[in-house]
Length: 253
Picture 1 (cartoon, rainbow, N blue to C red):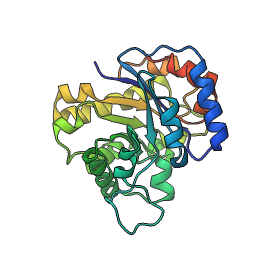
Picture 2 (tube, one colour; picture 1 turned 180 degrees about the horizontal axis):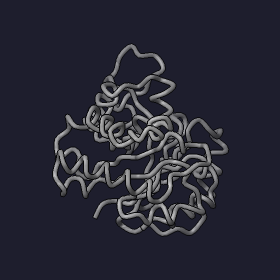
Picture 3 (cartoon, rainbow, N blue to C red; picture 1 turned 90 degrees about the vertical axis):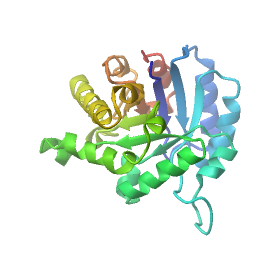
Picture 4 (cartoon, rainbow, N blue to C red; picture 1 turned 30 degrees about the vertical axis):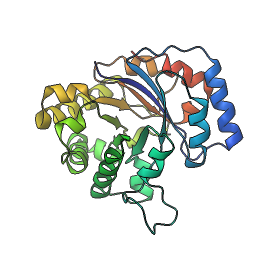
């Protein structure tokens, strides 16, 4: 059975002191993760080691970087490599978030290279995909997302994609308060799974965790996660409130 994942994306928020306080609050709230469920914390680079240390010994709780560079090492001032992340025991890396695609012009080819270097270093990508409002309104969301998957993931082997994590984020629902309806989320998640099944077979597709990322909150997580092809969420704003994110974790199926 594929993993059900509640992934926090803190984005560029919180001081170290605020981050540590948030994590202490979260740890103090009772929440049960069974062997099929994970909580993942996507924290800013400067706090990775601190949060990794706070989660030491906690079952099914992992830390994600919010990005990494697509080169092994070298004269790339300001960048962080997959090798560096692995050396401090990071588990996951969020790749291709819509904000990085938009503000930092990350291309399909660059993201394919980032996926490769993460896998080479034993890091698990959380690969983000999703359409802007204009594409949704034109009715072209399926082909748009399919292109993102094909261009950045279809070079991988079936083995590499077994147990992979994809996050679908309708860009028009990120931080806007708008949320895709349960039906819209399920429709796109089912489409993503069918695209992967067509290329790699049903067994691989069924092993992929597909998270929903678009204004997931404590009061809607249970319904969204209850859809058959929704395997958890990539959560922004609500992950900055301990009680809310604990509720979201407890909403995993």
